[in-house]
Length: 444
Image (tube, rainbow, N blue to C red; front, side):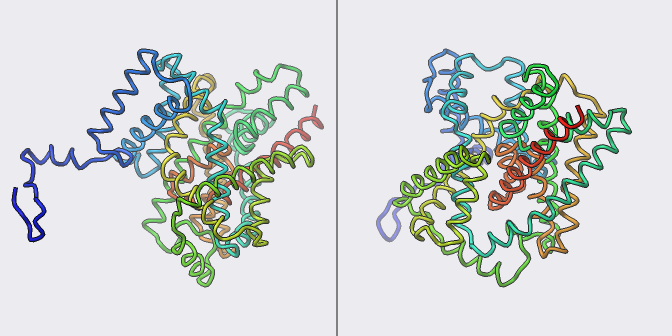
């Protein structure tokens, strides 16, 4: 060793080839790769031997290990990395592994406990939505929500017409194309769209709900894949054409955007306030559920509206807003890819996709999603919005609810658009479910 002027020892560079030094500098999810390999081996051996703890710790160990791995691989694969590779791999590879039975029964039970019994999805969505809303500039938030409804309505109308036209070209009836392909895609996801639709279809058409779930889910899954790819492509276009994108800001306004940038730049993560912020996020989620019993509007929609109202009316102290936003930044940085692993394992039924898979089916699904995105892109300039962000938000209407919003925004690196995406998904999805149910009942 040599000594520096401050008498601190300085180690000489370790011997070894360039590849060894490069390997030592690599990270997987901010974890040094050699340490990550050790951790992954521990989790894999525990899972294979049936000794993995069947609790939240075991579930988090599985999804975080796989999430960090597939996200790293997704960023390295040519072409795929430019169209949302991490999101596609984290969502679809676990589904494939489940389809071929490559997970141990206890591993699946552990992830089931975390994702469905503990409901990690709702926790992450609540943190992302409430935290991002309270951390946003209130002027940008309100203007964006008001202006978003126009591209959403136009996009939905054009997507339905395009889907019916393309479906007829491939021999599908208007009835089947609309109720079993288009509606599931824009219905708001599995929990808020497919399941209510299956119950409504069962009551109207007579068969058991699980029959309709198997018929509706594939369209939602395929549509979500197209939405992820569209988001990745849009982000790529934005990087090449900076004039088309606000880099996460929806409205094209110099004054508002400069104010927004100042607000965002001044916000620091405060770990002392994160606990209070997390408690407040939980309170917003519970309030949404309570009011759902009274007004029969989905709880997540009411949670968003409550957060927007409190933000606009300045009812929350700025310190608490900072605490909630700190939770948002932690969750968006650390839990998005692991969450998608759990979603892929439990919420994306690959067998349903395989059973109805055909070229025509995929083309119809793709036409609906692409038309939705293009509508938002081309109408944005008339609404003083950035085309890339408007297209991505509109595209979220064709995703798998909260699952799809996380995947789509992750693929485009636009997680700051989560409040607008949730409005597009929840309100657009709920409106679709209600309209489709009423229309089917009237036809039958």
